[in-house]
Image (cartoon, rainbow, N blue to C red; front, side, top):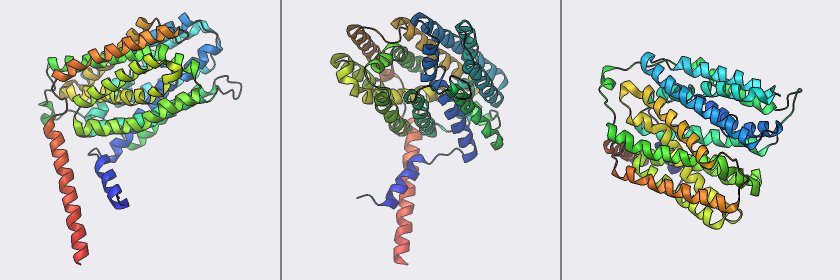
Length: 423
């Protein structure tokens, strides 16, 4: 049986990171606030869904709103990556986007006329696309490769359940505001400003880092293909699969089967990515997600919805991977550009998935939903071969060095224990 001290040692070895506490706090708080805001409100979130339902928006109008958001978000991420590449300014963009996102979000809480939803959504997409490249570049510059998976997984593990809490609770009316939860999410966006007290700084590129060339073009393409195809499937999932599931089971059950498993599986995914490299975990994530969708298609939603748990596990591995891989592939001088292009491709892939599915947001027949699930499973398995022939984005010597350091720590602890006993 593992003793309490041994368990503490394991946890210390697993979650010890080389980034200093100040920068770690800046990264985690900013990432968590942004992701809660993004997933709870503008990007397929329960708050946006409730808002559109209250406005009696048609299905085609819902699709148009989210498509507008993704288009402007994709363009904004590409542009922000270019700006960072030229100026190396990240912190200004991070805090500007947090303030602007909160202010525009507050507008939706007082919006009653559907005519203004699409233009404000377009503006919101432009603002939302600024944060990912800026946060990604800051994250990459203040972390080492073998820390990235666990740091990103912690932020995802916290933000996903927090965002989906809004799915469980009904819309709140307070102080004459019909959707007070929008105000709450806007305030969450502003909470990232608390990290200003830590005095975050933009880091320049020193001569040693400037020599890091990054992956060659072939490797970048081999890793980009599965990520793009994965998010095409993501667009299909959020457009028709999840809404259809919610038509058949309660939001509380869905929350328990999707969000809570993602909390734990994200942490495990981060550890897995930092100790086994990037390639093999991504292959496993794609395979689990593909098999889960295939089984769900065979059994049907009413019978097979428990496979949502395994779907969440596979999805979490790929989500963490897709947020850290650009830092691993990019040359030191081009991290901002890589994150801008990477996120631009991700949002475009989401949009493509919605377009393929028709952005119908549920309400389709069981035979149609099965067809989309099988189609998605096939896409995911097609995306595995590029990873098989790709080199690992996390060099093996880094993993081996980490394992050696951990082994040396354990040896030193054993020596200390023996010395204490002898005394």
